[in-house]
Length: 144
Ligand SMILES: [Zn+2]
Ligand SMILES: [Zn+2]
Image (cartoon, rainbow, N blue to C red; front, side):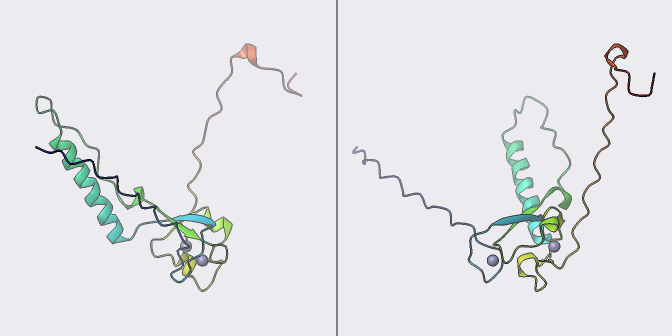
């Protein structure tokens, strides 16, 4: 039996360079922000997660208890990046927030305002200052 010589590896296709998310703009993106997923995108993500769980179940060790999976993710667990060139970028403060799934963003006629109400910034978790042992404390001014 003849063994065919290995065929040359197919040339790797370079991924297309990302472009501005404005529907008519092909400029290179300069900035990005985050938005929530649409219902269709969430369904797609959940289907992928369901498939990953089914694959894990198929690959499980049948002599051990089945794998325990956490709760399925919700829409709160996903964000998508929105890329924009300079002229189609929203305000820098708005770009720090998570935008609605239907945010017009780089297509907004009111740029640099995006046209949606972004989610408020999450409250920072209160961090209690650790208590130092008494022999590490220095007298503060006025306490003596
Ligand atoms: Zn653009
Ligand atoms: Zn927005």
